[in-house]
Image 1 (cartoon, rainbow, N blue to C red):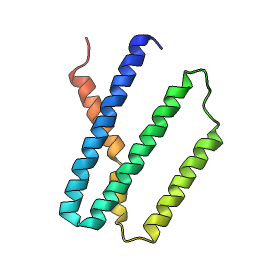
Image 2 (tube, rainbow, N blue to C red):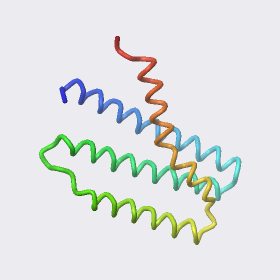
Image 3 (cartoon, rainbow, N blue to C red):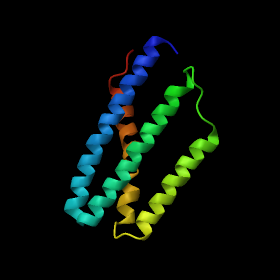
Image 4 (cartoon, rainbow, N blue to C red):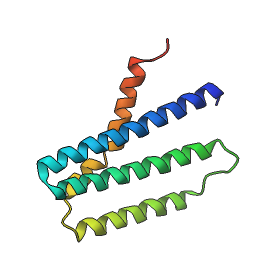
Length: 125
C-alpha cells in the first residue's frame, strides 16, 4: 500500500465512523419517538453492536499489513459467538424490541452507503 492509499483509507474510515454516530443518533431519536423506549433502546443496542463490529473490523484490517500478524480465525469466531450469545440472552429475557435491535445492526451498512455516495460525488479524476 502506498502512503496515499493509507491516507485515503484512514479518511474513509473516519468518515464512516462519523456517519455511523450521526445515523445512530438520528435513528435512536426516530425510534424513541415512533415506538417508545423499547424500540429506542433496541435500536441503540443494535447500533452499539454495529459500532463495535466496525471497530473490530478496522483493527483487523489495520493489522493485516503490520508487523504483528492478526490472530487466528478461531479468535475472531469466538468473539462473534460470544457477541451473538450475549445478544440472544439479552433479547430473549428482556422487553427490548428485537426488530429495533436488528434495524440498529444496519447502521454500519448505512454509513458505508453514505461513504460510497461521498466517494462517487467527490471522486478524483
